[in-house]
Image 1 (tube, rainbow, N blue to C red):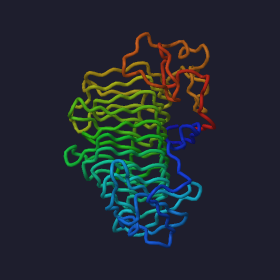
Image 2: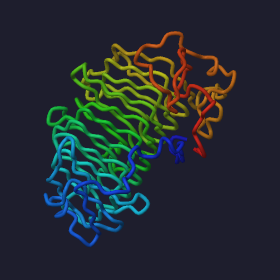
Image 3: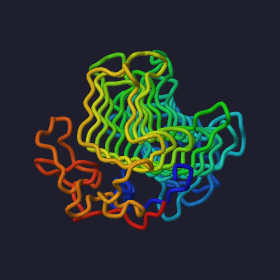
Image 4: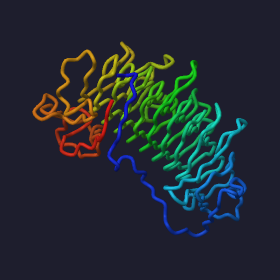
Length: 395
């Protein structure tokens, strides 16, 4: 199962981006067509603070050197999400888009295909960048990379990545010192089919040492390495949050990998990964596995087990109210229809009758489907089967 393809469809409320395109142009807006010089127009101060791209293939690459302000960011957006503009670059000496300015928003654009090691969007800004409702198809490099400068306030929301030959999203610097990303929000993205070379891992989303993020409501499947990995922080006050994600089908790794804390991992579903559903790893012998909170997750059909902790390497850790089934287990009937990805508690099953008598404050959050939890919440990621919204799911 871990090596199979998982087709998974969430209810439309979880897939639709939280931003829509206005039908009327704002003040200072300019429309351009694909036969115009995109990069020159972006960087021209006379363009204004909103650039609207008509349908068509626009020529890349481009280094965006002009930004906006906190209250009036530079917005570059598609005129129509039904006929999205595509940024095309067939070379290998640059990335498709590099953002060097602050207060920049990209909405509804398409990137790819690209050659090997050519990234879709590489961010070199210092603050306030948003990448919303964009699509990345058959990239030879990273879809979204922010690993070369300190960056505060990055939002990556509602994007789709299909067919990536490298890690899909890469945030922060490996040593945790050369750069850090803070106030990072990665939500409602859909990532499918990540491959990588023999010496490469191929993550879905990775957040490096001393960078901090909220990672929520993403669907990530068929990756080579971990769909999600965070490396933790040397500062115990900086905490990552991983919640309400669906991760499935990693070919070599666990679904969610924790290389260090502090971190809250709650209300996620991890299915059919080659190792564990959720795995803790003392990455680089940094001894940062402390302040780990893992609660109310569902882990199903992962080959090496549900939740795996390294012996003697974990401190100040809570593991509460998780539900799971592995190939070696005999109890499969707790869920309504796990083979169709419905992990609601089956009526009058052990899972249906299981609830927490006390709930720590960090578990006071909506379940995987966004439903409000009971005061004594049920075990696992789905609170009840009354509003199960997992549709047309087949492993």
